[in-house]
Amino acid sequence: MKQVLIYKRFERFWHWSQAALIMFLALTGFEVHGSINVFGFEKAVHYHRFASYGLLLLIAFAIFWHLTTGEWRQYIPTFKNLKVQFQYYISGIFKNEKHPSHKTELSKLNPLQRIVYFGFKIVLIPLVVITGILYLNYKTIDANNIIVISELSLDLIAILHTMGAFLLISFLVVHIYMTTTGSTPTSNIKAMLTGYEEIEEKIENKAEDKNEK
Ligand code: HEM
Image 1 (tube, rainbow, N blue to C red):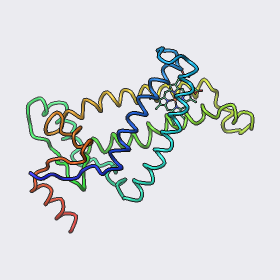
Image 2 (image 1 turned 180 degrees about the vertical axis):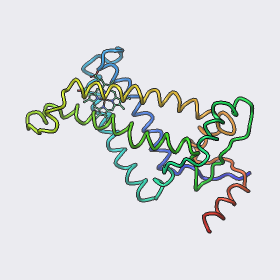
Image 3 (image 1 turned 120 degrees about the vertical axis):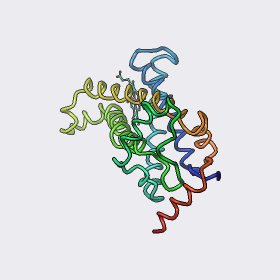
Image 4 (image 1 turned 60 degrees about the horizontal axis):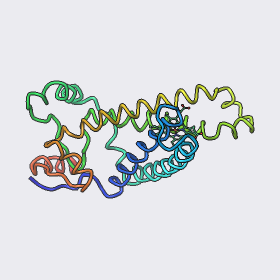
């Protein structure tokens, strides 16, 4: 076994700050929605707006980092071994079968994670962020009379934004469960905290060989 750096420093910072911001936005957002009462409506609106600026800034840095490091390639979906991976999660894992995919520095996501995270980045986050920005600027946009937006009602924007919020929370629940399915229940979380994970040397070498070819 060999300790391999799987998650780089920025990646860990981005992951945990995104997680914290999304949870805080869910807390304050559902207070705005009227489902809970924690800070009081006005403070919740204020905090929600403030945190949303933080998330937008973080997303801008994350896009830059993914593009400049080439890490975006990790998320290109693949159908190869997808069925096997899916079967592992619904059945093999409960029979103590071996993991069908092996994490390496060059390919840290299994086929199912690739598809799910791709959808998360391309559909789910944009849904919440775009509707959030429309919500944020609705009055301004309305006053400026921009035609595209004036055809969207605030009700529709709010419904889509809330739907995105529910989907994000569902993602979070499944995601947290999935973190426990690594080589040990805490190995994935440890890797995202320290950056390092123990990986079989043979697998790591094979991946490096493939890359050289
Ligand atoms: C960049 C990201 C986001 C922006 C710009 C944004 C913006 C907004 C705005 C402007 C509102 C209306 C309240 C107000 O006037 O401040 C709102 C409401 C809300 N937000 Fe967000 N938000 C974002 C992300 C999120 C996230 C990540 C969640 C949950 C996980 C969330 C959940 C909600 C909910 C549930 C409401 C209440 C909707 C309603 O019932 O009208 N938001 N958001």
